[in-house]
Length: 188
Image 1 (cartoon, rainbow, N blue to C red):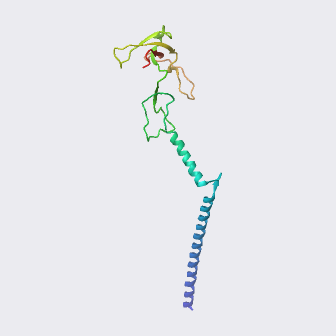
Image 2 (image 1 turned 90 degrees about the horizontal axis):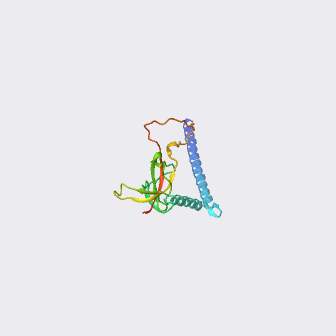
Image 3 (image 1 turned 90 degrees about the vertical axis):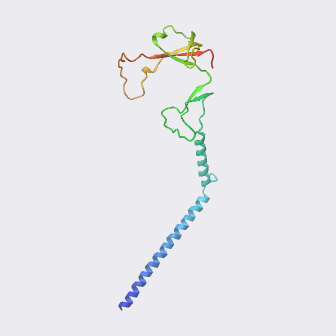
């Protein structure tokens, strides 16, 4: 009787093993059917008459075109770019501390010269002016005073949540200078 009992235990174990295999195969089949149904739904899904996969690719293409269009640096007017800080392939980013290029406009060019207050006492717009540049030794360029910019950055405070405090400037600190806009007779 013990031998018959051993055969019965082996048969139950085999049955459990086969049952597990059948259940695994059924789960795999169910998963494949679900994948097939998802693929069929994805194939047939549409947004405004366009397949969703095609619509997704079109949206990605449109976003890529937007980014490409924003990689082109365009000057606001005719002039020359100097001190260019970016090169092809570089990312300038959204948060930038300084400019990525400096533009010298061709139109309406002028010269700014800074002077102390006491030197500007008798300067008036329209007066003739003579300008000398270190770049051109011995040459004098004629022009006229266009305006005096009666402001400077000495009294400018950066935005903050602090109440501004007046502090007497040190006597060793030079006084502020004011800019004079000069239009040269020869624009070149």
